[in-house]
Amino acid sequence: MAYEKWQEYPMLAEDLVWLAQLKVGDPVCRWLGSCPMDLVVTEIRPGRIVCQAWEFSPITGGELDEDLKWDGYQTGSIIRQPRARPDQ
Picture 1 (cartoon, rainbow, N blue to C red):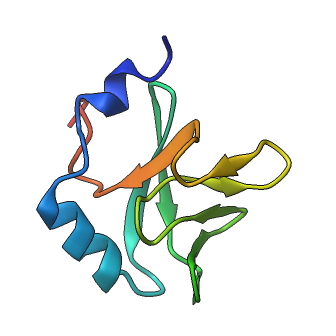
Picture 2: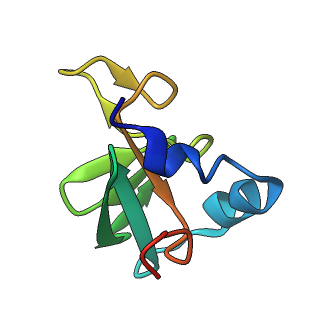
């Protein structure tokens, strides 16, 4: 399964605090399967964290994509703190 890398970094209490405190300009690490991608928060909207072309749930960090039916819980992409990368 493609999700094993980011599942090594499950949501922790500190991640919930981190998500709640994100602001425009903050760096994040997007995990798509086992591939990390460095992004920057470009906009905060009610119920959404926008990072360039992607939108994420402020509750789970999961990607929101209506076309793919990703609701932030059932998703293939998540954001985590940049330090949560196995290659760093």
